[in-house]
Image (cartoon, rainbow, N blue to C red; front, top):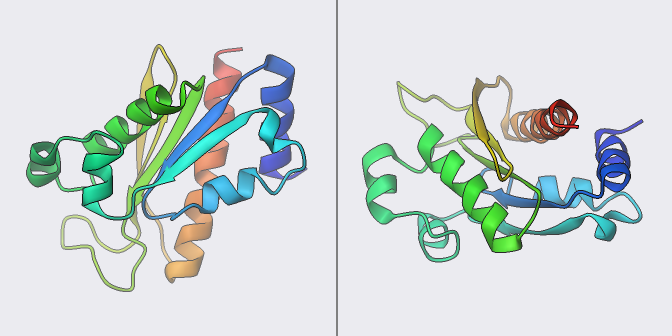
Amino acid sequence: MSLASRLYKICVNNNLSIATAESCTSGLISSTICSVSGASSFFKGGLIAYQDQVKINQLNISKSLIEKKTSVSLDVAKKMAKNSLDIFNADYAIATTGYTGPTGGNDKDPIGTVFIAVANEFDTIVKHFVFDGNREIITKKIVDTALELLIMEIKKNE
């Protein structure tokens, strides 16, 4: 069973809704979720916040936080997930921000660096990863890992 199908099943069985806030995955998590027929029964929507200005204006991330921590940081990922949860009035939200290459990154946070956040009304967890591969491979790994984390967090709270 695919990750999207597993997510569908767990959300429908528990009457849960999901939202997304995606930067480095540019909507691929939302697209993967919606590849399952009936996803509209639990998927509320998502925001692609590829540029910082969208993170600031649509996701209400403070400009000073982005300037201080950069948009690829634990703190920004956490705010993206929490604010998406509120914007969409969802039970769970997932957010991604990172460097998929071939440009971007730096010595501290090289290509493949990503932060994935999962939020619910009680808690927000953020995980830091560094994936190997080209842009396409890294993005696929981020999507799969994000969906696995979301499923794991939902099951933890069942």
